[in-house]
Each structure stands twice: as C-alpha cells, then as structure tokens.
Length: 301
Length: 301
Image (cartoon, rainbow over all chains, first blue to last red; front, top):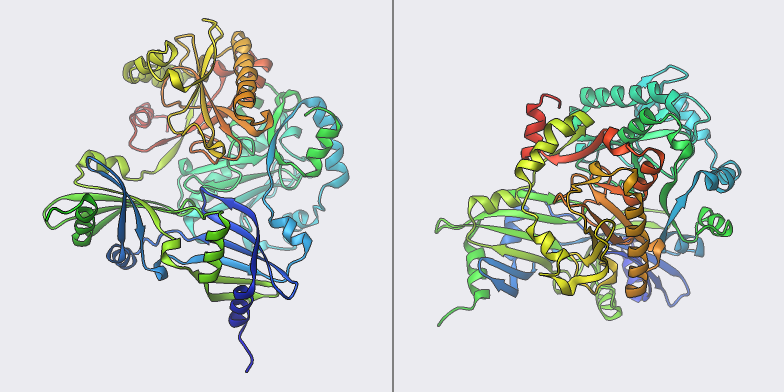
C-alpha cells in the first residue's frame, strides 16, 4: 500500500531527533527546529502557535473545555494556566525535508546589530555595495511597465518624473483589510533610497502620499488616518518605494531602525533640502550580512 | 467544605457566558473576552498563547506527541496543522471578576488614528493639554531624589543640568537579558518631551547615550550595538526620559509613530538646532483619547 504524503511526513517526524533550535520568538510564539533522521536526512520544523478564533461557537467551546490551574490570586485578579482541548489549540506548521545547508542557514535566526551610517560611510561603504551587489531590478521594471503583476495594480500616476504605481504587496492576499499592505513604486529610475531624496523631490512625495491615501480610501474604505506609510532603510531593493499598511497591522520591520515615516521624510526635506545627504542614518542589520561585514572592515563599528 | 480560590474561579468560569471580544491580537496571539455570570457579575478573561519552551526535554516531548494534518505539500515543503498534548500547550491567562465598567473600558481594544502635529498645533492644542492634564510627576521626582525605587538605579550622573538617572523600568524583572528595559530620566526639570529639545541640549543627549550604553555594557554585558534607545512621542509622562531596550526585544510602542530614535534626535539637532520647534511630528493615538478629541475640536484632523 502506498502511503500518503501526510503519512510519509508523520513517519519521518516520528523517527526524527531534535538537533538544534534554529530560532524562537517569544512574543510571536514561534519555534524553528532543526531535526535529523536516522537515514541521514535533516529537516526543519517551523512551528507557530495559532491566533485565537473570534468565532462565538469556538470561543464557547474553549470556555467549556478550560481547566484552570491557579498561579496567583490578588483581590479580583487571578493568574492561571489554562488547559484547553487540543483540537482548539493546534500549531500552524511547516515541515521541510530533506533540507540542505543553504536552507538551514536561511532559517537559522541571527543576531542583529545597530549600524550608524554617516554621510561619509554611505559614500564609501553602502553606495559601492549597492552598485556592486544590488539585486536585479528587472522585476520592478516589469511591474512598472505592466509586463507582470498588472492585476495587482490599485492606482497609477503615469507621470514619468513624479508618477508611481500603487500595487498590492506580495505578502498581502488583496482581501483581508486588517493586513492591508500596498507598495507605491516610483516610475523614475535611479532613486535608490531616501538617501537620494532632496527638497526637489517634495512634489513627488506629496503626490505619493495624497494620491495613495485617496486611492486606498476609495478602493478599500480605509480612512486616511488609519494608514501608516513609510520607507525601509535599508530597503530590500534599491528602487524607491513606499509601504502603505493598515495602522492596525503589526507588520514586520515597521519598527524604528527599520522604517522611516513618509511624513518624517517630507518634514525633514521641508526643513532642509539636503537633509538625507547630510544625515547619519541608524539601522539594524544581521551580523553575518555582507553590508555589516563591509562596515566592520571600514573599521567604523 | 470551603472551596479554594482555584475552585471558585473554575466554578465561576464554568457558569459564565461569553458576551464580547474586547480585543484580539493575531500576531501576538492573545484574546480578551468579556464574560457574564448568571448571578449578574461580569468578568474578563485575558488569554495568551504561551511561547514555546526551548528546553530539550520539552521539545522532545512535543515532537513525540505531534499529530500532523496535511494542508498542502509542494516539493520538500509541507504545510500542516499539528495537534500536541494539551499540557504542552497551556494558555497563560488572567481571570478578573467581578469587574466594573471602568475595568471593562480599560481592556476594550480601541482603534487608533494618525495625528500630524504641526508646530502650531503643538502650541495651541498639545501644550495647553499637557499643562492642564498631565499626570502628577511626584513619582518621577521621588525616583530622581531616591525617595523611592533607589534599588532600581543602575547608573547616575548627578549633574543638575545634563545629568540623569538610569533605572530599571517597571516592566522589567531586572534579570532576563532578552527583555532588558531601562529608562534614563533627566535630572533637569521642565523638559517635557523632544519638542523642548534644542541644539543646546546636545551635550546632555551625547552624555545620556554614551554613559548609558557604557553602564549597560558594564553591568549586563550587552554590547553597545545590541541596544536600541529611543524617546516616545507622545510620552506617557511629560518629564524627559529615554528608553534603553535589548535590540532583540520586540517592546510595545517601539514602532514608528510611537518611538523616535535618540540617534535621530541627535542627528536632527546637529543639522538644525530648532528642528523640534519647527517640525511636524506624526504619532498615533486612541480614538477616544482626550488629546485626540482636542485635535478634532481644533478641526485639523
């Protein structure tokens, strides 16, 4: 009898031994494990606690099955560990096997560190790094020219100097309003990041902010004061783009040292046209990242 | 026979009916429920999925009990729901009963909105609000004068103009390095927030940054490039202070529109001594918050 892929996975996991915690996140409640199988294969288990259901019937079932163990009690406040039926509390998981070293490295959590990029270090370290190693921007140009992903476009201002395309981000399903995630990608080529922006670019920035917020309101009914808009620094690709995200959504890399508000960029350029040419920008980077190593080689960390 | 407080809570919960979801956070996996009891009381259940244990024995038990249900399979990548033994997957919870309307309001999640505070709106709305409604700062002065919480002090520079006290934040247990959370509170009175800072305050800001990072390294062994330091805007109390936090810790309100990096403040004041007097500052605020209402009344939202 041929076994199903589910049985194969279950059997693989049953024989696998725990080898290493590749990563763990106590605030998002995830655990990445490296496993080894007697047959010599390695595998990775990505385990996530699931969000609570907000369905009344599921909540009622949860309350019914709850078994309390008191940890402490003070006046009206009691602290408990609660056991609930296991089918109400499954893990959302990926099991990947067999895996090679490259995949293992990808999932191994790595410490980050703070980098303070002075204008000089931008010129001598970051800019040469971008020019030498930046990923191919072909896919971005394909989006702008509607060769691909044209169905993801929510709005376009086709002005070649100040225009942009507003499109659904790949991380968004295009439906769940709570996670709304759009990217505004400028039509103009050659603007790598906020570092390249000057006061001359303010008309483009006003236009991106105001027209995108209008389009999001028109298309998704999300009010302008319910959207956060920011750049990443460093960005993941060096063609200028702005992230537009539901304020409610705790998106990855929306923290300080990763994100710079569009409103702050506008404010800073209004105060000083050369702000981003003259500023020290502070961001985080993985320890083994090539840019980190270049900064360390520049003996500035 | 007298019942234990655990039994009392278990019995209360068994009879309670689900009334309302007060709040839910799908990324941190929490659920706040309002419950009602036939005796007329109301209660609140705060339920949190627990972080995974990283102990080898617990991980091995988890792997052994894992029962896979395949959702999809593509090449080496399989996606599964996994059931595990319920004692490995308890909820960390608080049950509070009976509760009054004030407590219910406190735990009811509320939408936020984006506020753009121009220099004029700061002068006409925020500053009068602070002067009229700011909380009593007695507890801050008590800390600075070591009348209270002197055991929490990690470092002090007692200069009356540029000095500060670096102390363990109330949210931190003082031990768990992953969650390291300290506050640097300036000795000088009258500096309400970053809005009051000018280029003249740069010596104080350099001193806070450099001496605090040194003290954290000396006392806790955490390297300077492993710490993030930022102001909140708006802050929770209007006596100038800086948050120092382990870079690894995903602290509340460390996102853009809540936090402003100390390094960015220093950079901006170096470029323009009046930066924070002249800037529009963008932040989020709960919809029903008094400051939000004052902004709305000023007809500027």
